[in-house]
Length: 287
Ligand code: ADP
Ligand code: SF4
Ligand code: MG
Image 1: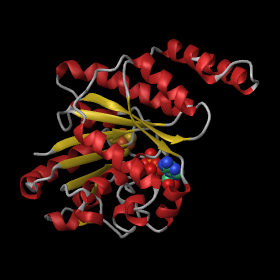
Image 2: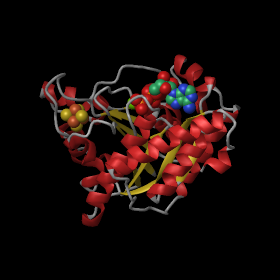
Image 3: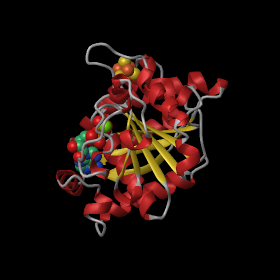
Image 4: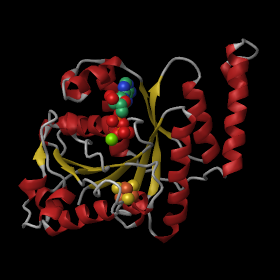
């Protein structure tokens, strides 16, 4: 029931911020939304619920008592149902048990039948390439994934790893890619780098999100930009992105770059940036 969408990306790249603003924008447009944080940091839904305490699914399971939906969920901005899967005891690891346990419990609780969501967003840590990271795209939990990336090499490297996982599991019913969310865009060649990357990997851009003080300021208030600064240009950027993701049905199996291909591509861009900054060529000529 509902469209289930996984949002991936390197740690600290802006997954939770972007996912929460998409959830808030969809809720504002009248949809019923569930956001499930699948990151052991369990801070995915902070800005939807004013940083209020929310026990994680794994912590609750560890206590061993019978769990009710109210114990592990809270309604945040616009009625978005917030859930955090939580993670293993530090240093132990879980190989995906966290996300699996959370999803199993939510199914036992009949969550999707009872809440009847239009959209379910999974905010998944995507730079730790352990068994856990592939769970949402491998096990039929979602049929579509997006990846948040800046123009930084390590962020694109993590995106490329996701593409490899999608490429591996798509033939046996795994999820496909809806697009790349280009985050932290600044004036200059940031867009060109990400544009070039999606062209090379046969993927596309779902939206460009500027690096903006509005995001940081809203976060300090424990809110999304949609809630704290609804009139801002940044709020409209998130609304457009949410609309695109809600409606997009063009899902692809990406062509990830091989390790040496990716290294050569990055090196090439290193040289191009030198040329652009020294006025040897313009951005357009450089691509
Ligand atoms: P992740 O969930 O991928 O680990 P977060 O969403 O927690 O990353 O974002 C990390 C930090 O970057 C946060 O402090 C957030 O406010 C900031 N951030 C993310 N996107 C933007 C943006 N577009 N403009 C400004 N700050 C941003
Ligand atoms: Fe850690 Fe992997 Fe478990 Fe995530 S799935 S918490 S990365 S062991
Ligand atoms: Mg996060």
